[in-house]
Structure formats: C-alpha cells, structure tokens
Image (cartoon, rainbow over all chains, first blue to last red; front, side, top):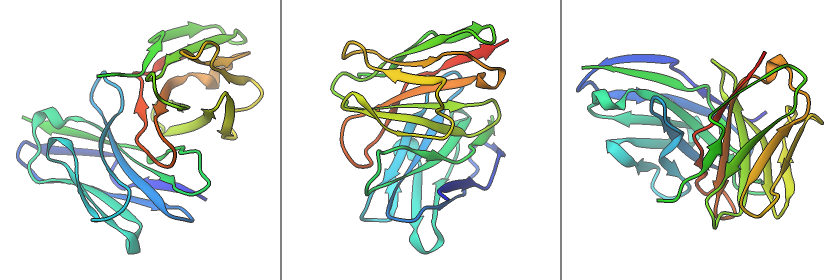
Length: 115
Length: 114
C-alpha cells in the first residue's frame, strides 16, 4: 500500500537550532517527492520538491531535503531555524507513471520554534 | 501571483443537509483535486478531476460526494447528506501539467456538521 510516514509529530526547538524532519515512504514505483508547509492560518505552500537529478534539493527559506532512494527517505533539513518557521510540515509523494498526480501525505509535523 | 481560492472559509451545517464547497482554481490549470483533513489526522486525497471527468477517487469518495466544474471557472464539491464524520477541513488544489507537477492549494473550507 502507498503510504508516507513522518517520524516526528511535534518538534520544539530554540531559534538557531538545526532542524531535521524525517520522512519515509512506501510506493511501488518511481515517485516525485514534496515538502509542504502550512503556517498558522495559511494554506499549504510548497517548500521544495524532488523529481529527478541531484538528490539534494534546495527550497525556499533556507530549507533543503535529501532523497535517499535506498532508504525510501526524503528528510527535510534547515541549519538554523527562526521563530517564523513555526508551522506544520507535510511530506508528500505521488507516482509518476499511470497516475493522476494525487498526493499521498504524511501525518504532518508541528514545529514550534521558541524565540 | 495567481492563487486558488475557496469559499466559504467556514461552513456549519446540520447532519443530513447538503453542502457545496466552492473552489476557483488557477485559471490555466488543467488538473483539479479535493483533499480533506480531519482534525488531528493526515491530509487525505478525495478525488482528482481532469477534462471534465473524475480521473481517480479514493474509497472515501462514496456516492454521497460529487464534483463538477460547471462553468469552466469554479470547481465544486457537493456532499449530499452530511454526516458527523464529514466534519473536516477541505482543501482544493490545482495543477497545470501532466505527471507529478506542483499542486497549488487553496486556504481550505472548514466544514462542521452538527
């Protein structure tokens, strides 16, 4: 079955701390991978995506993610978080072939950054 | 910057009533989606829509649900007879191209069924 698992449900960090949010997926085929962010009171926004090529992808606001195919993982990282990074983060995948593009989401990770 | 819009932002209804959730996707997009998120749970795919027909639907999307694009602009989700368990945040999304391109999400409609 297709699924996405995010390891951390709630993360609390102080400003300037480093962040790594885990994401693993199960999907029988080639996938595209995404991280979406939802700031309080706002809609889901794309942070970054991986389709092919360099497995280390850089997104907006200093975020990056690394696709490790052998581990079925796509972890999100940021070297130094800011208070404004407080938000909910969702990992998502979709299949490439024979697929309508539907996204399968992880359960989300709530990040709280203390000033 | 173009964006997906949704109305209303919050809908309260009585169990058994019909509701219509409205979305205006980005104008040149071709693929449209509805997702929902029950409080405390993950975002779940409901249905995808392309070329004026449903291209895929989940097991959640039963006969009580329907979608349509009545005028080339709006994309609606109708729930015929709401149940308590339909209470959730409903997100509309649209995408421009084939394959796995980025989906742009609307702000969501919070549906509360009493």
